[in-house]
Amino acid sequence: MVNPAEPCVDQEESFLNGTTRRCEALREIKNARVYIRTFGCTYNHGDTRKLIEVIRHQGCTIAGSPGSADIIVINSCTVVESTARKVLRTIGTYRDSRLYITGCMPSVEADRILAICTPQFIPPGCIQEAYRLFPVVQKSVPGIVQVAQGCLGNCSYCITKNARGPLVSFSADEIIHQVREHVNLGAVEIQLTAQDISAWGYDSGESLPRLLETISRIEGEFRVRIGMMNPVTIRRIVPGLLRAFESEKIFQFVHMPIQSGSDAVLKQMRRGYTSADCVELINTFRDRFPDITVMTDMIVGFPGESEEDFFQSIDLVRQIRPNKVNITRFSKRPGTEMSGVHDFTDYIKKKRSRMMNTCSEEVYHSLNATWIGKKVPFIVTEKIREGSVVARTPTYQDVVLMEDLPLGTAGHAILTEERMYYFIGSRV
Image 1 (tube, rainbow, N blue to C red):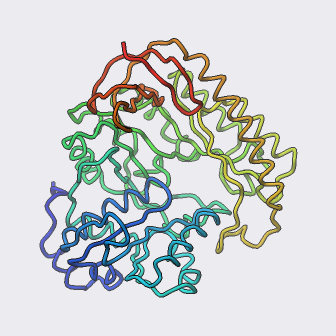
Image 2 (tube, rainbow, N blue to C red):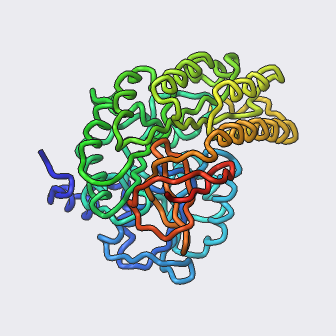
């Protein structure tokens, strides 16, 4: 078996000598002070951490501010229009600098960037290609480990598939190496991330449950948070996933984006499931793990969403009672099937977003109230500021303890207050 930490010398020379033409921009970042600004999801932050290791290998140092940098890199996100505009404003700020752009935007919205300035583009795949030659893991909180890029879906509204392409699962050896290195460096929380984690291995004949079972055998005091899993790909691995969740090394946490409670809207989105399928999946997890933390995503104001469709989404939230709902107002994205359809006004989308948020917060407070006064096990995963730390329960509840405790400290706490998205706890 090849050690992922030992790159092939021929591959390294090939990359550095420029035979991989599309990666020229990345190879140009040498012997400089580099400032990196990252937008978007956990996966993008994983790309940034890998990029840092690549350019360090090329003689660079990381600058703490744009003013102290020779080069500025913007790791972009374009999943919704509001984020894309923030990225473009930032690009405009640094247009006179030696500027490089990576992330999702260059491959799907390069024209908007080039209307502002002419930076160098770094395809995200080049970061992965280069990092495999220098797979150094630096100490970080939490540890982020990417397991795949791209997805199996073909949603009618999603620009990410256009940017990241079809599913490419990273090897189990590569993933295990990175998890082990993070643990050796003291990371207590490991976040596995991908566009759709439950699809991992579909293209290589492997499966996520087997990967999780292998990770669970790694020695050390750590826990794994599994990122977003889509209902379609979860369904084929439910039995194994339930077994994997029995491990103390795996947080009992499910992030499953449902997007709508209306089957008509889900069909228009081309999500490949019904709302009843999602209710059944969540009930299956709760039957085995009654206290499991459930997180979902909902889109409001999707083109053609009637009031009845919208209230079906409200009803679904009340039925499944998630601990967290990421609410997004529909945003047209270029190059997608929905880019040319009639859109709702911002007024309607904002109104529906506020109603969904109010409904969700009522659910949060109702769920949280049942935990006040209870004693829960915890492990300290992060330090916030002097005098307080963030701890996680086995079900990934966020507990703030007003003490200075080392990472990895385990114990029990009484939950004394709820702050909607987290609890205040008192160690016992």
